[in-house]
Image (cartoon, rainbow, N blue to C red):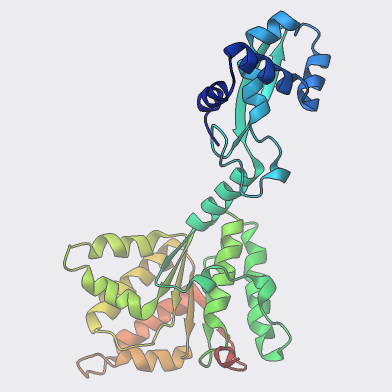
Length: 310
């Protein structure tokens, strides 16, 4: 929407004289039903007071005040996203602005989105909801029950042990993580979702700018950490022990929960982690990692049809 000054200038150019402009503007404003109600409620607003403050009445009159008429918010007002509020004190008119309901909703959504940080996670997972989880299959009942039970405890405090969802490819394990993250965001709890294979590559690339320690520190301290598809690729002994082990050790000591998804059970994951990229077998060190996983999460099987083929 044009500024008030621009509107007036345009109006003036289209009329023969300033008096014509003024009288037409005055008539248009004062015949508006809302402006008439305001004047009737405040007898002190006589003709002299109105003429002196006609520009304020025009400002209020010309701005969108009804969110029902503006599904995108008050984006064309003088203050985009804000609607005018008129205050009358004796014969003095004051105009202030407050956020329209759409602006408030957008801010809440932005704050909520900021609570969920992700590293290479699909957008549909970030929008996952418990309401859209198919609960008809009995094979999913235990996972749903564990998820609901965990979230019911969040009202009192954040449980220190997350969930380790494991099962076949495509049964919805990652979606469960996204749904939990969104429910936690509703409770103003921040979480971070990490896709494990890309996480490994992200750490490797961090050697270039010497930011490994800074990034690992974020994963250690975020209130809720979610690691998706752990075991999806072979990792080096260094990454297993110095990165993953360090993160899990810190969170175990601090009582911070970790959620996982994996195609492996913990027993299978331990075997996978024992085999390094160099071909070495390190069962003891892999066992330490899995024991830490047991401390920060509870194993929950999840099976069913491959939903990615639906």
